Length: 563
Image 1: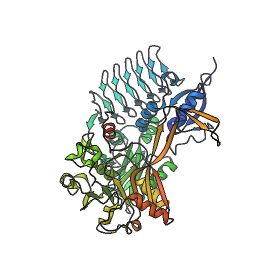
Image 2 (image 1 turned 120 degrees about the vertical axis):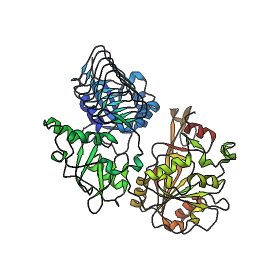
Image 3 (image 1 turned 90 degrees about the vertical axis):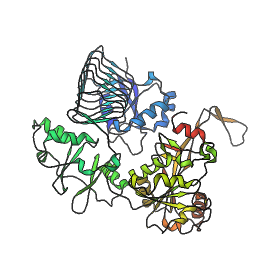
């Protein structure tokens, strides 16, 4: 039987590992190319063609008989689920990839879309769900059951009868005792030993593993620091505790002496170092770092160029004050920018809900929309926030007060009459020194604020407009006519149209704010048009991931997960 063509969905490190496995199975698979759904991820030095992004899937489904395999790492579980949901790829077209060195019992089952990597062991009646990753050297004993989209890291041992839910990450070298049940969305830290059942949504670490609850945005960076005399065994708990996969080796003044990653531990154990060995003997002393004034986006660019997952933030004396990770920034490094949230509208399209409640106070996932926005701004290291209020504004002030309970400073711009989508900017007590973030108060979004600011400053724009990639699928065949409109030249079945729409998020230069008339109703569209007429540079920033404008009942139902 000839080898079957296969398309890899993903362009990062995990995609390269999957490609390496496919090339060890030349009689079964012929890689056709890869799709890169995440901008910036590239399969360098693989000689495999990029076929575009995930929007090419319908074309490949229709034009080829190729199978597909999802190859995005564990940090992108949400993206992986969305691609599977939106792609329309039938189960029969998802491949199952098993490395030739893996030992799989004839009675074990691996569902479509899953990958089992080198030297893994699946014993009798082990069952792996859809789109899972079983990494190198993992051992799943008899009757282990793993649900969809779960990632099992290298060296994990799951005892007989263990059940693991969906969307879980089981960390490097973890051990799970026989017949343990682990719920959905659970993270098991590096080197942990799980001896009791774990409910959904928890993070567990240590030996034995214990559940922890923490707010990473307010994490004391000292929790990640260990002394040079700490043993490897003791440091394993710190490495896995907050999902950082890194411990910071510091002196008593918190001056950074070295870093210790899960990779350092693996290499030390391979060289037969004892677990009681002090970390100073195996830590990495030649580490990279940035100063607190380096932007999040610049730090991310440096991490990606150096192919590292963590980057310490050190003050002028070399003391640790923060830690950049690919997903977030830990520690208390604040940006100098202010944010203004427009929360004065009446929300008439949401009535009767908003008859006695301002729209930004409508609850989504158990919290007011405005609270979600404030938490997101604080987690993006913006801690000086203004809220423009008018309709039922006292309810907003009573709820959020001065912001101290949320880790920020909140002040209020009180509109005596409605001032439109930008007029409240004229009420700022003084002209800011740095670009201002302006957001509508009815947004559910995870926009990367720091990257937007970085893009704004790099482009020297007067205004940067956050935009959303809005897609509309036409449910009919569409006819294209020639220029004389008397002959059909093309027919496209149910095409998808894409538009860049205003997402209600802006970065604005202080010089633009000076032009806004005091207490005058002003729309952002008017300000943008004025900048265009002046010939000034305006930019856009793509808001990726979640974005919902809660302006109507249907959108509110969608945000609440009931539509």
